[in-house]
Length: 392
Image 1 (cartoon, rainbow, N blue to C red):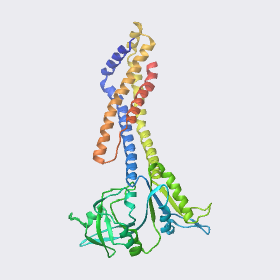
Image 2: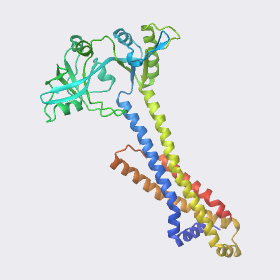
Image 3: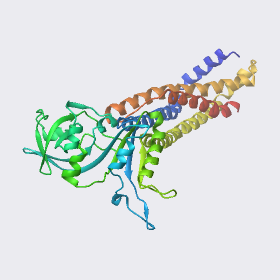
């Protein structure tokens, strides 16, 4: 029997029981829609995390003090002070780095007139903006002369400006107080938004590193050193070079743990991506259970269909139909039900993904592979769960 005739017969058989066929498809429809939507949410989250981390500075390397073993006892990270100005000077000579900025943060209340806002005042060097890929939206950045003079000037983030100047007046040139110390606003930073950890990057005031050291915290130690690799391809080499330079600068003998830690953006992206992939696979597996349930439904209906149509089968065989023709007829019915349900499921899955983006504002990304995978699973489901009833 020709394949076209088998398709025509199978389609007519499906049309004779529209309600039962739809209920059979329902498991496949829900399964495919769930798989596409779950994979889209997982992939969208992964891409969003990667873009947020990259926005912090794709080549950025973060160096912080870390615990070391002293006299057999390991110190707490918060009590360790190991990064100083000679470390920065040594790192500025590194081959794979094109920017180094120390950092110290002080928290306090910024006040102007009747408005106040509790925020972070972060002391940095002039290289910090290029390391973070951050620009000044209005005004000018501070310069080396401001750093040498420990000038009381600052670059203000959008969140701080919005709370100190809620009426929209131009803040550049105005003076505010931070811990009763006057600071002149010389520039407004462009908007950064939240980082991958949910922290508002715009809730900050940037000022020369020397200003914080001399006027606020009175310390020679740095809380953090930010560095930037020449490009993403040499980030690991830059990280290794930093470790070598700082171990030499701190005179750490071989076999002794570092009193600092070096973290690259690539490491952060890798960590978050691996976690996101695990969650995506978990969501896909949960959604895939619906496909299995839908396949069992197809098998049950095909069993019923075979039983109901015993006379039809006998009649076809009496006029010359072979066993393989009967097998193909019922197998094609199962595959048609599965694929049709898959098509409807794809439409619903794509629509559901769009609704999630619009109403819940979750990042989503529908990939071609997820749609192909859904169709492939539909076809395999139809063949697998339709074969035994058809064989019977």
